[in-house]
Image (cartoon, rainbow, N blue to C red; front, top):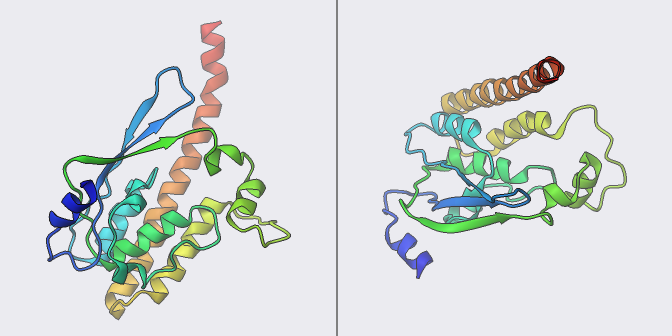
Amino acid sequence: MERRRCANGTPRAINECAITDAKTTIEGKAIPTYHPESLETKAARPHDRLAYVLRSMSMVCAQFGLIRPEALRKTRLFDRMIAADWILMAELAMLGEFWEVPETLFQRRVHPGVSTKANRGVKELLQWWDPSKKKYGSLVSPMMRLGWEYLRSIRQMPLEQPERLYCYATALSVWYFRQFSNIGGRYKKRLFKPAEASVAG
């Protein structure tokens, strides 16, 4: 019933993909928390949609929504790498608009058995994504490597040349600004943590 209601409410003007509204329940805390996430973007230009999705992705619940098969056939689907769902969402954003039904039709439960919690180290998580590999050595973190993977995706997307260049520039600037901001935030937190502890003591 819920899937049919979502499909009937999707305008035919969306020629690529549509997603539902979703919330994530995060367990392992005293009180389970809900993590709402919106990737809805109706921007006309692919690079604008890409920019919004790269800035907004977190739990990537949109991957569980309703996606047009003709759009999926133009993507790499789930490649064998950490955060392959982020790559898929970026590719879909370049192919078409993301629409959300203004109603929670899906709830995702984050429990101790999910891949990112059951595999605590990077090597363990890499092995979970690609068991065929024997060695997983890399000087670049998986999230920093995603910038290169976004460029690979842009190269194979059916985009006109000016728009393809905009997408290249968008992927590099938006993604790495986000990553370096995250790194700066972590170092700032570590820097001020000893000071906060001494004041509290």
